[in-house]
Length: 161
Image 1: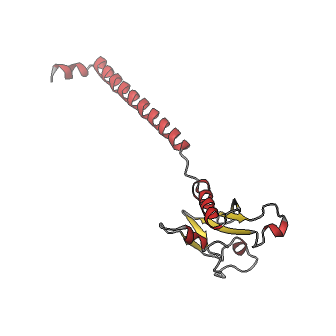
Image 2: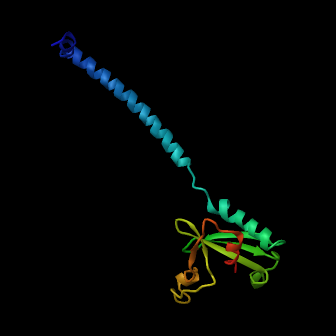
């Protein structure tokens, strides 16, 4: 045995060794706890980019400027089972009741969300849900089309009803 190992094998030496190890542990624990707390605060503050503010509203402005100049845009939603959000291009926002939603006054484009944003294709009706059912009322009979990476304003235009 060496001199240092003999020293540690005394009750005092063992106690001192344990206290040094415990102090290192407590220091490391406190450091890691602070890092976890900091990471948790950053995690809690992390917000997913809102698709309405970051994609749908700006797209609505681009579509309005190109295809519906002079109209106002209104974004409504999310609504229903598929969290549908619609951009409305309104000719006369002062109209009320059924006149406000007539095809001559309002044109719209609807988006749905299911891990990604998609466009609802009202040109097609799959008939999957019977008339009057929750699925039918929520637009479930119309396919939700994946938006291609190279989508142009003209691509979106074909889905405007």
